[in-house]
Length: 234
Image 1 (cartoon, rainbow, N blue to C red):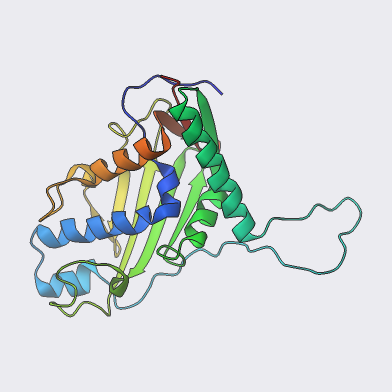
Image 2 (spheres, helix red, strand yellow):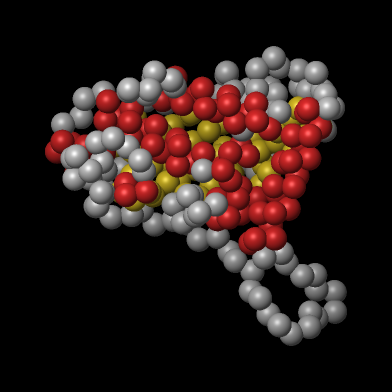
C-alpha cells in the first residue's frame, strides 16, 4: 500500500469505536441549537419523537454443530471488533515508530467497532458504496450530555441524522469535507465540520484531527468499498 506524505492527519475513522459518533452527533445538536432554532423548531423540525430505523448488521449464527467440509468459521461480533482494534493499534505503534503503513476498514469493520462500544451501540450504522461513506445516526437525547436537554424538556426526542463523506486519495483531517448532511430529513450545511460549537469555541474538525493524531493517521481515502488509512513514516 502506498503511503502518502501529507503534513496534517486525516480524520480518524478508528474513533467510531471510541464513541466519536456520539461526539459528532452532540456537536451537530449544539451547532444547530446554537444558531437560533426556536423551541418548537428544535423539538419538531430538528429532532424527532421516534428513532429512525437502523440498517441491521448481519450477526453470525453461533451454531454448535461441526462445520461442513470446506466451510470456514465466521468471527463473532466481539471477535471482529477485537481484530479491528488490534489492526488499529498496530497502525498506531507503526506511526510512533515512524514506519509507513496502512489499514483498510470495511463497513463491517466499522460497524463492529460501533457495536462493541456501549456509547454507540444501536445508535449508528456506517455503509460504504465504492467511494462514498455514509454514517447514519439515531440517538436518544437522553444519552447526550448537552446543557439544554433537560431545561427544554428534550429528553424524549431523537437526533436522526445522515452524514455522507467522499474522500479522494490524499485526503487528511484538514481537507476532509462532508458532502451532505441531513437532520431529521432536513438538509443542513455541509460545512458543519468547521462551525464552532456554541459555548465550546472549538469546531468538530478539531476533534477529527485529535482522533487522527491518536492513531497516527496522516491521510487516507475511500475507495473500493473501504476506508483506507495511511501513516507516512515521518
